[in-house]
Length: 309
Picture 1 (tube, helix red, strand yellow):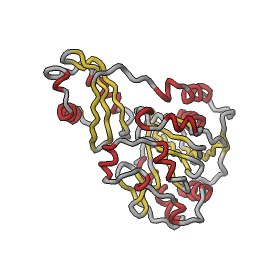
Picture 2 (cartoon, rainbow, N blue to C red):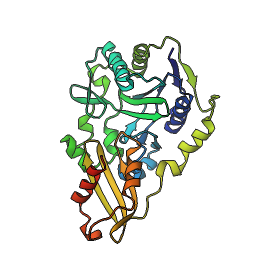
Picture 3 (spheres, rainbow, N blue to C red):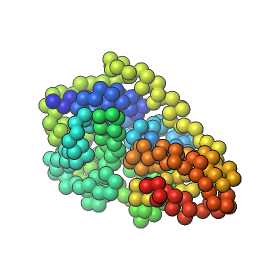
């Protein structure tokens, strides 16, 4: 039986810590949560490049980093978040997405999957997903735009021009829509109720907050609230190249010493949270023909393709 949990907290970092604890348990569960105004970046994204940090600080918008891949998203109380956790070896993604589409259908909405795990209605994105695999446990967490203030997305996010070119649009706002724009009567509670039924949850949710007796919660709170986790460290570098592939945007920060890549940091919105780390490992020590002057995007693109991104 799937355990159902609901967070009493609206703090993004607290909810990420609770989510991490539930994943650590490794039992099948559905976690429902909402956040006050915040921006959440993926595991390998550079917050300075993805967000307007000064404006966020001035207006009290929190910043959180999740351990899964994917891109930066703006959230507020008009957005509903959920996490499905499964230890099962069954077709995890297709099952979870099937439940999500079933929930939307029960609300009278004709939704479908598109691109890199987006859910769309009338060609506009209403939900984005990211995944994490930890041992034998898989997790799918997603946002659902209920009645979010769409204008705030462009206010706090600074997406790469390559990403906008890939979608052939001028702004992030033009790609997204809220469920309430299709049916003004839909709210977060209605969505959560339909979602719980679609996943087969029959019990009332167990309510959680930062005082709940979850094993490891204190250490997870310490991690997700730490500046080291949220901001990371930008390494010394003398070359920067941005490349767009089918998997996402990859930004290479390279320290070149002679004809060799002495150090490398890879930022990316790709969904595979392990890929940037693998690229960093493989790129360190690679030769660059004729030194820094010959470090052109086509060469990095060829190297990236060779390494399988």
